[in-house]
Image (tube, rainbow, N blue to C red):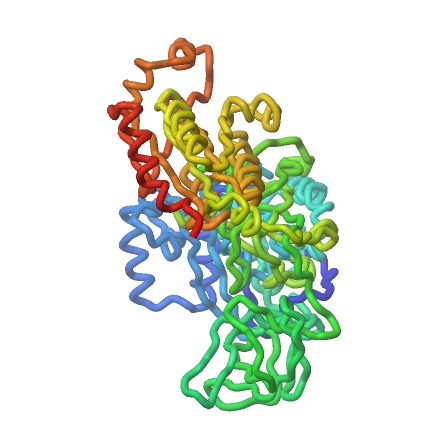
Length: 628
């Protein structure tokens, strides 16, 4: 006898049997996810007659079921989805039975839309993983299962679909279930229920079918109606990310947001996590009036008993059970951008209401979604998953994702395109993040600068190879030296002989090269020097992050705007000739990109005479570096 297991155990979603259940359908392409949801909507009488009539008409044009109604069209609303017969975007639908209400997310099965699937999984309580009975487990099936595990989904329903196409074979069903259980064993799901279904014909979806007499377990809907996802979010420690400081008039100051964990009562003690300042909650205000208590998921405004400095991004927490506050942590990362992840590059990290510049300091390993094995990697591509260490420019308030999905998750944002580049789940803070402290010196940058009677500045020359960066920089340094200024010149080739000799010329290595040079230039800046840097530095994001690192008033970007044709003609080191002959790979300007500055501080055309260019830079610079 084949049945669905009933080994339910506590979860932290805060919902019990009979309450709203958020569910996710996922799996490989063409496994029947949209058709299954269409069947659920139809059989639960959640479709209006005009909607059904429209789907019947569209089935004649886009349908894949012959003369039958194609229920997948209820979900596939985009023209491209209907033309290709696939799901691209996440579609959310509400339906209800007599025993429970549901919000279901229909997610795409194609690999290139895995990021959309992860979005749908981030708020789900249970995942329905569909498998085509003819094909069995595929790579995307396993990837989706692994992502569900990463995103904290602890209950899975394995729906072996299209059983009608294998003659409702028990042997086929048992073989797929056995294979999936073996794969899912290390994923720490609390329950894995397996049900043989046919979404097209409604077999075992709402009503148990005589076509599978060997299956005596619940139907898909029966399982969803009675699964017990027990509440434990109230037992979590209190977490309240501040979204808005509310000041409607001078006599009111409140802090608005949504309780991310635990609960708080009027008169209870809270602490501002980052500063450690302790206060009490004097009022809990909502649109419907004041309350005595607020719990996880409640949107409220808290009025505090003391006037303390709190702003958007701060987190109010339980004084007896505080979160981690650290600037380095380990995490699992799902990469969602077409451009590869580059360790060392500066991204924006957004966690709740906190938004902080961050860098991936180490990619420890990539995870093979087929075997769950760990393998060495230098970068992550689209839809790849890895374990990373991340460093933030300021302390981040967080819990491990396993303890709190809201305060333990984050996204990385590309600072140039503003696209979501990755989604992460925090594992734990790194000990060195709290053990290392900044040491204050008696003599700092201001004292060094006063002694040298100059304003410390970084002059950053950027441009294609052969554009004239080193030539102009050398002449400029001589002028400054003759005038009595204290300078130091960092050149790309010289640095690669020592500090960066372990780096190659991949995009990831180029990012790390500039990151190291930027940190070195900042140390020299703190010594009161005028630091002249000559680096191709092909990526705009790295140059912009350097400006942010030291401050815009101490960073001067000088763009050597020489055409590629002129650089090839000059070719002082013979590198262009070698690259064009195929002897050098990843050469900037040829087979590796160069992103010119959008608004450089100084713009030098490659057609200018060296003496004229140097004089123009010096005339622009000298008034700005004189000691005030």
